[in-house]
Image (tube, rainbow, N blue to C red):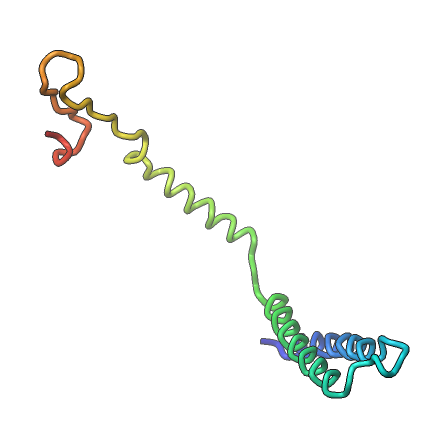
Length: 120
Protein backbone atom coordinates (compact mmCIF):
# COMPACT_ATOMS: atom_id res chain seq x y z
CA UNK A 1 0.00 0.00 0.00
CA UNK A 2 1.27 3.44 -0.90
CA UNK A 3 1.38 5.38 2.37
CA UNK A 4 1.18 8.79 0.67
CA UNK A 5 -2.39 8.19 -0.47
CA UNK A 6 -3.36 6.82 2.92
CA UNK A 7 -1.78 9.73 4.83
CA UNK A 8 -3.41 12.32 2.56
CA UNK A 9 -6.87 10.79 2.94
CA UNK A 10 -6.34 10.38 6.69
CA UNK A 11 -5.38 14.04 7.14
CA UNK A 12 -8.44 15.20 5.21
CA UNK A 13 -10.68 12.84 7.20
CA UNK A 14 -9.20 14.02 10.52
CA UNK A 15 -9.78 17.67 9.60
CA UNK A 16 -13.41 16.87 8.79
CA UNK A 17 -13.69 14.86 12.03
CA UNK A 18 -12.28 17.77 14.06
CA UNK A 19 -14.95 20.04 12.56
CA UNK A 20 -17.67 17.54 13.43
CA UNK A 21 -16.40 17.18 17.02
CA UNK A 22 -16.18 20.98 17.48
CA UNK A 23 -19.72 21.37 16.17
CA UNK A 24 -20.87 18.60 18.52
CA UNK A 25 -19.14 20.25 21.49
CA UNK A 26 -20.59 23.73 20.82
CA UNK A 27 -23.93 22.82 19.29
CA UNK A 28 -26.17 24.19 22.04
CA UNK A 29 -26.06 27.89 22.96
CA UNK A 30 -26.76 27.18 26.65
CA UNK A 31 -23.59 25.83 28.36
CA UNK A 32 -25.71 23.72 30.70
CA UNK A 33 -26.98 21.59 27.80
CA UNK A 34 -23.62 21.16 26.06
CA UNK A 35 -21.98 17.71 26.22
CA UNK A 36 -19.43 17.14 28.98
CA UNK A 37 -15.69 16.67 28.34
CA UNK A 38 -15.84 12.89 28.61
CA UNK A 39 -18.61 12.72 26.05
CA UNK A 40 -16.65 14.92 23.64
CA UNK A 41 -13.51 12.81 24.21
CA UNK A 42 -15.45 9.63 23.47
CA UNK A 43 -16.85 11.23 20.33
CA UNK A 44 -13.32 12.27 19.30
CA UNK A 45 -11.97 8.73 19.71
CA UNK A 46 -14.89 7.36 17.75
CA UNK A 47 -14.35 9.86 14.92
CA UNK A 48 -10.59 9.11 14.78
CA UNK A 49 -11.34 5.39 14.46
CA UNK A 50 -13.89 6.05 11.72
CA UNK A 51 -11.45 8.33 9.90
CA UNK A 52 -8.70 5.71 10.00
CA UNK A 53 -10.96 2.94 8.70
CA UNK A 54 -12.44 5.18 6.02
CA UNK A 55 -9.03 6.35 4.82
CA UNK A 56 -7.65 2.80 4.78
CA UNK A 57 -10.63 1.59 2.74
CA UNK A 58 -10.32 4.44 0.23
CA UNK A 59 -6.54 4.00 -0.07
CA UNK A 60 -7.03 0.30 -0.86
CA UNK A 61 -9.73 1.16 -3.38
CA UNK A 62 -7.63 3.81 -5.15
CA UNK A 63 -4.56 1.61 -5.35
CA UNK A 64 -6.28 -1.55 -6.58
CA UNK A 65 -5.61 -2.38 -10.21
CA UNK A 66 -9.10 -3.32 -11.30
CA UNK A 67 -9.27 -4.02 -15.02
CA UNK A 68 -12.94 -3.94 -15.97
CA UNK A 69 -12.32 -5.12 -19.52
CA UNK A 70 -10.38 -8.17 -18.33
CA UNK A 71 -13.02 -9.08 -15.75
CA UNK A 72 -15.77 -8.75 -18.39
CA UNK A 73 -13.84 -11.07 -20.74
CA UNK A 74 -13.38 -13.62 -17.93
CA UNK A 75 -17.08 -13.46 -17.16
CA UNK A 76 -17.98 -14.02 -20.80
CA UNK A 77 -15.56 -16.93 -21.10
CA UNK A 78 -17.06 -18.61 -18.03
CA UNK A 79 -20.56 -18.10 -19.38
CA UNK A 80 -19.46 -19.42 -22.78
CA UNK A 81 -17.87 -22.51 -21.24
CA UNK A 82 -21.07 -23.24 -19.37
CA UNK A 83 -23.17 -22.79 -22.50
CA UNK A 84 -20.89 -25.03 -24.56
CA UNK A 85 -21.23 -27.85 -22.05
CA UNK A 86 -24.99 -27.57 -21.62
CA UNK A 87 -25.96 -30.57 -23.80
CA UNK A 88 -26.71 -32.56 -20.64
CA UNK A 89 -29.13 -29.89 -19.51
CA UNK A 90 -30.99 -29.21 -22.75
CA UNK A 91 -34.37 -30.50 -21.70
CA UNK A 92 -35.76 -32.13 -18.61
CA UNK A 93 -36.30 -35.85 -18.72
CA UNK A 94 -39.90 -36.75 -19.55
CA UNK A 95 -41.96 -38.23 -16.77
CA UNK A 96 -42.83 -41.88 -16.95
CA UNK A 97 -46.46 -42.77 -16.78
CA UNK A 98 -47.10 -44.96 -13.78
CA UNK A 99 -48.95 -48.22 -14.21
CA UNK A 100 -52.58 -48.40 -13.19
CA UNK A 101 -53.79 -45.55 -15.33
CA UNK A 102 -55.77 -45.89 -18.50
CA UNK A 103 -53.91 -47.36 -21.42
CA UNK A 104 -54.29 -51.10 -21.35
CA UNK A 105 -51.82 -53.29 -19.50
CA UNK A 106 -50.31 -52.28 -16.20
CA UNK A 107 -46.68 -52.35 -17.41
CA UNK A 108 -45.05 -49.74 -19.54
CA UNK A 109 -42.05 -49.95 -21.84
CA UNK A 110 -38.89 -48.37 -20.47
CA UNK A 111 -37.99 -44.98 -21.89
CA UNK A 112 -34.56 -45.18 -23.59
CA UNK A 113 -33.73 -41.55 -22.68
CA UNK A 114 -33.82 -42.36 -18.93
CA UNK A 115 -30.73 -43.67 -17.17
CA UNK A 116 -30.82 -47.40 -16.35
CA UNK A 117 -31.33 -46.96 -12.61
CA UNK A 118 -34.57 -45.01 -13.25
CA UNK A 119 -35.99 -47.61 -15.62
CA UNK A 120 -38.19 -50.22 -13.97
